[in-house]
Image (cartoon, rainbow, N blue to C red; front, side):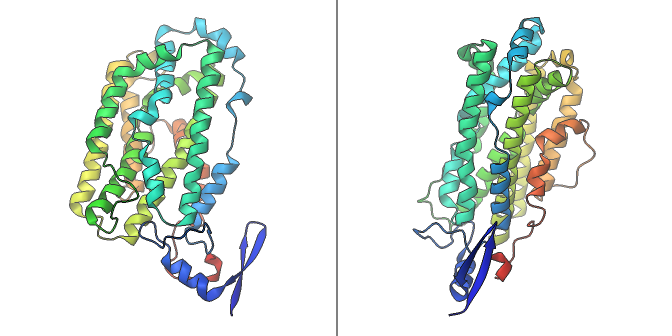
Length: 350
């Protein structure tokens, strides 16, 4: 038996080379070999493992960020700014229900490569962190969670209407050899990550983060920036998954399907801009004009489309400091050495 030595982090393994070649060839995003054993070796999707490690290294605890100063400052900030914070917390409390986040579990069940399932496991942890954030901020600022959710209810209903309209229900029993199901899987991946978590209410985040830049509620702004960093890693995970899926299934991407995804992003942009008009009339009090927010949303959408191969490269950002939050460098650095999956087995891929 011919073996090869595999190094993963600081550990080494001896693997049967012939079996490793067979296992590597059988690994796919969907419709790969189904096994009862969880073994990421041989490692085919290096980017997924690197992203998983980066997400682990990015671990943080909301309680580590003190909010005593924010609590003392809260009564003195303007009503418009208080409303922006309350709406953003209302969004955090309801995001799973309105953005189609439950579909993440279906996507996790459908993917077949173990290293892809591994990185999806971080999502559950980050959901728990999000709940810890809400408890920490609500209690520290003495805010009523029900009132915050009510502040956000009308906007939430509009976003939910969009996801209900476009999200296709899939589960692990779906026949993923059918083109319609493969395209539905790709569409759901794009909708949740690029149009919802990667775009919706970025204008609201921008207002609250700008408050932090000017010395208002700095602890709250820091916590929300950390949440956005987590979201940035998830958006990158789904973007890479979308790209790998299409590379392995070249029947998915047609001109008509691409046009459908671009139209979906256009609809998400229109929804976000209507939110700016309807709810952020006081954004200027935080230092941001609505026209600037509109331009920034266009920039984010164009950047998401370009990264998915659905549009040209983007112009410079109108708010580059926000890009540092919404597009965390770590998510890109984790993939810098693994941007292209190998199509043939090599010892280094084990």
